Amino acid sequence: MKVLLVNGSAKSNGCTYTALHEVERVLNQEGIETEIAWLGLGPIRDCIGCGQCNAKHPGCVFDDDPINELIAKAREADGFVFGTPVYYAHPSGRILSALDRMFYAGKSAFAHKPGAAVASARRAGTTASVDVLNKYFTIAEMPVISSSYWNMVHGNRPEETLQDKEGLQVMRNLGRNMAWLLKCIKAGEQKGISIPENEYGEKTNYIR
Image 1 (cartoon, helix red, strand yellow):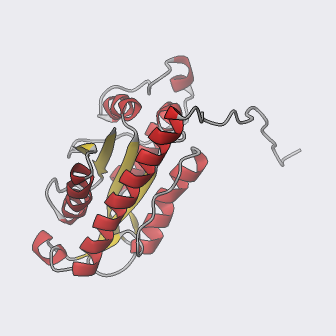
Image 2 (cartoon, one colour):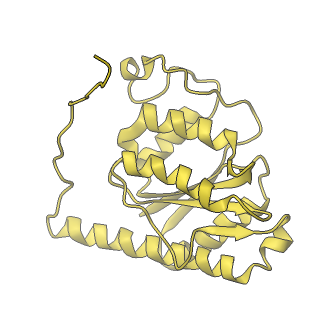
C-alpha cells in the first residue's frame, strides 16, 4: 500500500512539508509506503476547460508542467494527502490549479481511494482551506480522512510548526486513521468486497 502526499507550497521544506512529513512518519511506522511530491516552482497551468483530456485519456493535453506525472503517480497510489499553505484564507493557487487538472483529467486515478487535506497557516484561514480541498474528494467518490481535530498546523516557520504540539498530534492521528482505513479496504478486498457499481451519465442543466 502506498500514500502519495502532495506539497502545494512554493517552499519545498516549509511548514506544509513539516506537517506532511509528520503524517508520513506515522504511515511508515504503520507499514505504508509513502512519497512526498512537491509541485515545484515552475508555472502550473490553470484548467482551461478544453475537454481534450477526454480525447487523450488518461492525462491532460498539456505536458509542460508536472500534472501528467502526478496523475501517473496517483494511479499507483492507494491514498492521498494534499497539503497547502494558507494564502488570503484559501489554498495556494498552485495546488488549486494542480487539483483542477488532476481531478478533471485523471478522476479515475482517485475514485474510491481515501484522501485527506492538510492546511498550514501562521494564524487563520485553515478551516476554509481544508474545506476547499475536501470538495475534490467528495466529487470523486473518495472517503475523506479526518483526525482528532481539523487537519491543520500553525507556525510561520518550520521551527514554529514543530512547537504546535496539538497540530503535530493531529497529523499523527491523521496518519493512523489513513493507515487504518487502507488496511480495512485491503481486508475487504480479500473478502470479496468490491467497489460499488454506481450510476453515471445523467446531467441536469437548469437553463432551459
